[in-house]
Length: 47
Image (cartoon, rainbow, N blue to C red; front, side):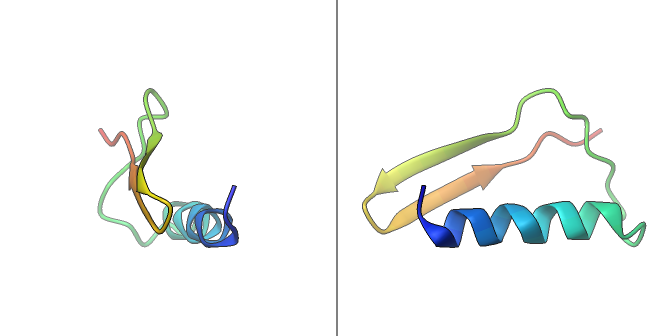
């Protein structure tokens, strides 16, 4: 797993854990879509 993906997940956890997000995670279906060797989209389930 590229370090950028690990760093992004850390940012996601921090964002939703801070209590400042206007969205609430659903924790149902989060996934990574690897488009190429240099591009990844991360999708987060929210309520």
